[in-house]
Length: 404
Image 1 (tube, helix red, strand yellow):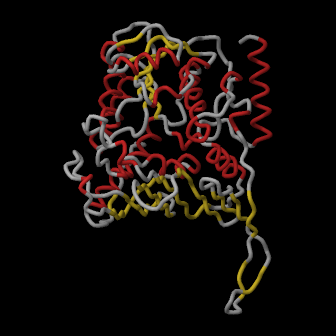
Image 2: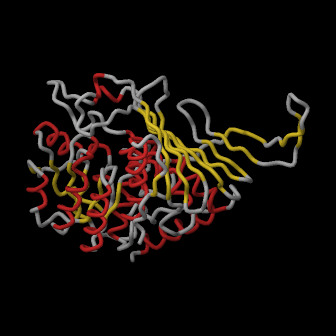
Image 3: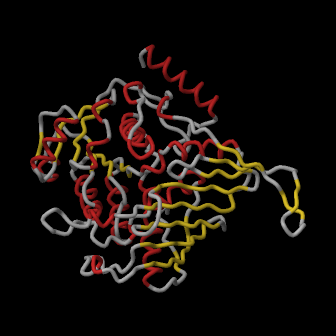
């Protein structure tokens, strides 16, 4: 290790000590510049895939890009300053120079594309969710185990500034015991993405909300490590003609799930595509010593701390009076948790740069990424079972555990 790398590592250790972020995969990101190696990556998917800054990472070379459409391939080449492109994933996977692929393809293709890429000998970063069925969850899980290659799911909520702060609070014990939590992913107006300009349905047409659950479930699991074990879920639909004929046979715009965790705690998750809702991806963590509420659009992030103060309510009864105050969120992307060229804001609450760095560094450092296959399925499978519950009018169902 070169001298400047040692210095950067020492700086990172000092930063971790001052911020309270532990040097474990759940609570921290790797130190930048630990190696001079350049990982050769192929990027697939010219929409979402444009926003991940692989070309800025000091340990990465974008070897090639791919999309089925020529204009999207051209956009990828321009964004990542790459001169090589392929017309399909299949052709890209035959390139012996490519060591890892970043898959930003439609959700119904994720399981198939991940398995295909792993079998081709490539490490994989894949957009969310990991799968759309429990059978696919098992198939992806087995492929990762059998190949021994790195798999990471690009879940943005794990790397949002609010979640990094919640991890810090949790490790420092500031919450006390988190006894309940909740998260919301509201995306009203999603139906504008249901059809292409020529009227052809996209993969999003009628997508059940809880088959896209990871922006919700990860807010709890990434912080505490809990697993969601049981669920009852209710769906809401309005017999809209837009939902007719969707490939998922889904009648719901919105779904609300009540989960039980392996610690006996409660977690409420909502994914909603329609209604008088403010678009958001946010979480709430409620503890016996402190609670933390992430921002809702322009509303400030707040913390609530337990105190010894007492007051009276409107009926004259004695009540506790915890203190609620705004919390100024740390801009984690400005810190040495990222390599210097990547210390800028990015999509989904600053998460995109962190996702790229975590994937690249996990391979360079020969370690598991934060959102490994077990974490990915812990975020994904509960939503699949929740949707099944909603279709069964809220039946209480058990969620499979993929940690075994």
